[in-house]
Amino acid sequence: LIFFAIMFVIAELIPRLLRADREDYGSYQVMTIFANIGFMGYPLLDAMYGGEAVIHAAIFNLLYSVLIYTYGINRMKTSGQREKLNWKQLMNVGVISCLIAVTLYISNFPVPMVFKDTASRIGPLSMLVIGDSLAQIRLKDLFTDVRLLLFSVVKLLLMPALLLWGLRFFITDPMFLGVCLVMTATPVGSMTVMLAQQYDGDYRLTSKGVALTTVLSVATMPFLFWLLKI
Image 1: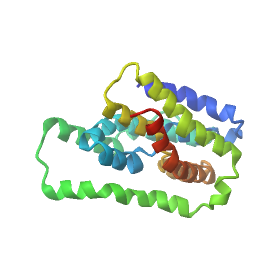
Image 2 (image 1 turned 60 degrees about the vertical axis):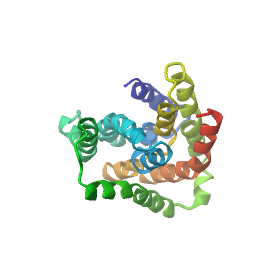
Image 3 (image 1 turned 120 degrees about the vertical axis):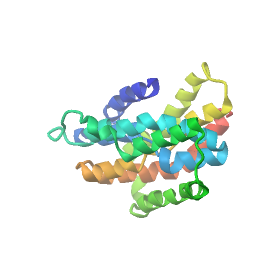
Image 4 (image 1 turned 120 degrees about the horizontal axis):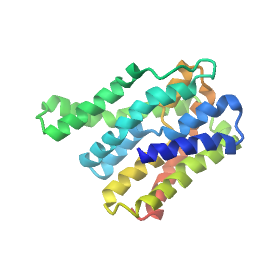
């Protein structure tokens, strides 16, 4: 809750500091808050720390799923389209899936092997979504957008480093610190592109944001783990 409260403030400041066009404010705000936890975070955490880390991420993702289908949609719409919060949006496939996962973990309910085996193999396939985003963008276009490059540096390096610096005063468990770092250091979530398409946001900007931060995260995430000694 504290993390997302801080992120809301940062999301309000970033497009203003970058002097973005007014109509792009919503896109930058959504890209700032919502990272690629499902498609990149889960597979990475499973490979690095195992299933327990994924459960921590799923609990984190509960609030993420609630906010992206409420705040995320609201910000992505143009000012003339925005409407009051519809609480029915809270019960969506993302929230329901997270609730089921946490319930199964807490209750230790036996799950048939066919479902366990299928779920364990889905993670890497989700990276195809990121590959599709990259295939639609020319790399030359990504690295000539100065504003988007500055945004990427803030999102992929500055914000995660500051967060982990603050968390070290309260948390000593390396695995939990690693989970927190992955939750914040992953690139822009591909859901931002889908929201932009559906709610008349800047589809090209969000596509470039996903592609650029995904390419850069290949270097920035290992660098952060090395720098912060996790």
